[in-house]
Each structure stands twice: as structure tokens, then as C-alpha cells.
Length: 185
Figure 1 (tube, rainbow, N blue to C red):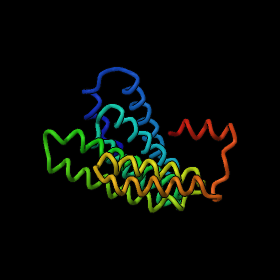
Figure 2: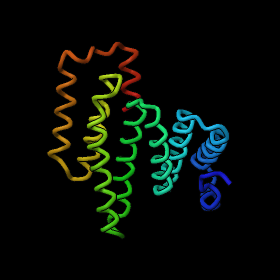
Figure 3: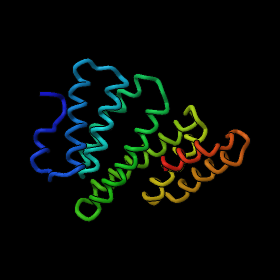
Figure 4: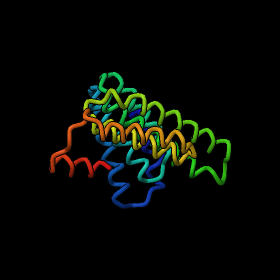
């Protein structure tokens, strides 16, 4: 059996596009595992994590995204790694919100993971290849920190992003790039 845990989860999912996407992602992952390559494995694991998140299986999503991050780190590219760190931060704050009413200690732990991942993303942001991507990463990390109640740190990251935007370090986006950038946000 492959290294993923699709079989136990699948029977509980209702039919629909999210389930179909998850099945496809797990099939792609199984194919990637036949001849693992870091980029292919990272992308396949990340897609499985995204799909698990879409169906509300947050702990499975976290496991797959963490595995994707480990593979991405072997590539040495900050862009893919920082995106996964942001996603893990966003997932952790989602987990904290889901646990808040039923398990306060677990919610607190998830919120701490979200904070840690946000600060990690912010520290990696300057290593990205595109300064516009750096701004996007800072704003994602800021949003998570704000949701965690760390308003001062969130504002600090927003100010850092704003400073980059108004500085001469970032060239203005042309119309095509502006549309693509807005699609990311």
C-alpha cells in the first residue's frame, strides 16, 4: 500500500468535486512515488494536502503539506518552500479555529504552530525570486498573525510589505502581471 492514508478516509467522504479532486491527487501521488523526484513529489504531496484541506480533513492535510515541504526544501528554492510554509500557517490557524470550542489546549498549540510558521514565512520572504511574491508572502503571514490575535506583529509585516511596494526595489507590474498577481490573492 502507498505511503498515504487514502483508504481509511475515502469511505466517509460524500461524492462530489472535492472528493474527485482528492482521489485524482492521491492517484497522481501514487504514480509519483513509483519514481520519486523532489519537484514531482513536492507538487503531488502539496496537491493531496490541498485536497484534504478542501474536504475538511485538516490533520491529513497537515501531514501531506509537511511532507511536501520536506521535499521542497531538498530543491533549495525558496519560492516553493515559502508557499508551503504559508499554507501550513493558514492551515494551523484554521485548525485552531475548528478546535477552539472543543479542545482549548489543542487550539492553543495549533495557534502557536500558525504563529511559528508565519514568522518562518516572513523570514524566508526576502529570499524569494520575485519581489512581488515577497510582498504577497508578507501579507499572507500578516493575515495569519492577525487571526491569531498578534495584531502588532501583523501590522509590522504589513508595513514591511508597504515599504517594499513604495520603494524603488519593486518595478511596477504591467497589465498582464497585475492580473496574474491579483489572481494569486
